[in-house]
Amino acid sequence: MKKILSCLFAIVMTACCFACDNSSQNGGKTEPDLSQFPLYVEPEQAEYKFDFDEMTAPYFKGNVIYNETVLLVEDKGAISGKLQYAPVKILSVRDYTWEKEYSASDFTVTGNVITAKKGSALPFLTAENLKGNDIPEPFREVSKVENVLTDYVRMGSAIYTESPLFYGHQISVSYVYDVSDLKTEEFASYAKSGFPKLKAKLKAGDDVKLAAIGDSVAEGCSSSGHFNHAPFMDNWVTQVADGLERKYDGNVTAENLAVGGMKSDWGAAASQVNKIIAAEPDMVMIHFGINDNGASVTAGSYYDNMEAIVSGVLAELPDCEFMLIKAFPANPVSYDSKLFSQYWRKLDDLAAKKDCRSYTLDMYNPGLTLLNAKKYVDVTGNGINHVNDYSSRLYTMNILSALIEY
Image (cartoon, rainbow, N blue to C red; front, side):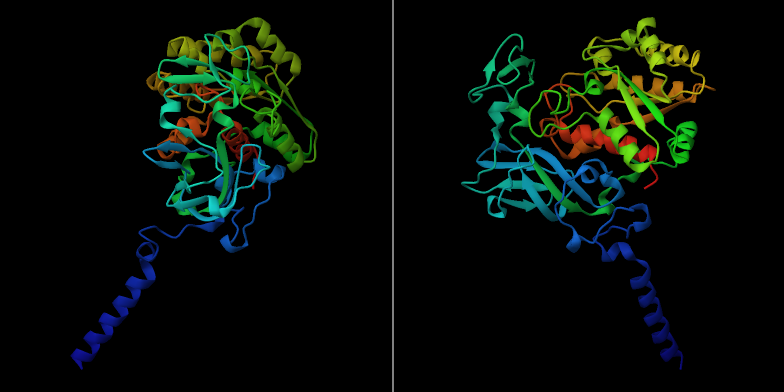
């Protein structure tokens, strides 16, 4: 009898192990809580579609990424690049315009690596090209960019260009990914973002005014629409206003006061603060740091300038709220990453200050995670500090995730 009971106990315990240890049944991963992913679709039902919703909906609220950019590089005979995640299913591979679709016979995918097959039509650059050597025509090295279709400048080991040298060779990959690969804590969420006054107005269907102040990334120099080339995508400030207006009943407008090349001291000047006040915004999106870093502005001065913008506006608009944006990483070979970290800690300090009505939005840390898997040239518009259409869309996705309860 004892032997029988012992056997039964062993069977029960074995069954419990199989039932409870989900990680062993999923390659060491725990089963995700799909309630965190309201945009999740069954992989077999996923298909390529790319209207405004697909362009702007936070991919991290679901399991499909649309038109993630990759720059394939030829190195030692192989032409390949990396996606952020290993695809469960490829939906489409297209050129940078989103119009030309490549055949499945042009490429293979292993893990998160996409490789062009021999004779493939996929565009690529060589490892030597990325060093500034043997750049193909019609691109030309100059000391100052004058023609945005052809010119590039060497900046140390980096290449600066507004031409199609980078974005024109990037492919756009749409795919289903495994949400258990996602670091959900790195992305903006409605529950934790703040902005109580703005959210109350949006929910009530009231009209809402937004304003943005900052540098070239905020101005929209990262978007194809700015330089009037395909696919003519709007900048993220405009996309955010459009996304909120589609979701809520009130009218949402945005006044973009950002100017390329400017630092936080420019934004703190009375003339700029007065322009923000004149716009009467409910929320101001502030995006400085990249040019401050390039000029080696100290973290203390950066904080003083950011605080001056906030306090100056609040003196006239006491109900205004502020989104302090930690910028998506610039090219790490050209900028001081330690100084960026100091800036972002100062933004946290400002957001923690009593009655400043400020909240941070982090594009920097999820950007670093992305760059752990990918190359900077996969997601840049100019090789130095501009995001491209895809990484610009990441701004839209995170800001909308902070302000919309999906």
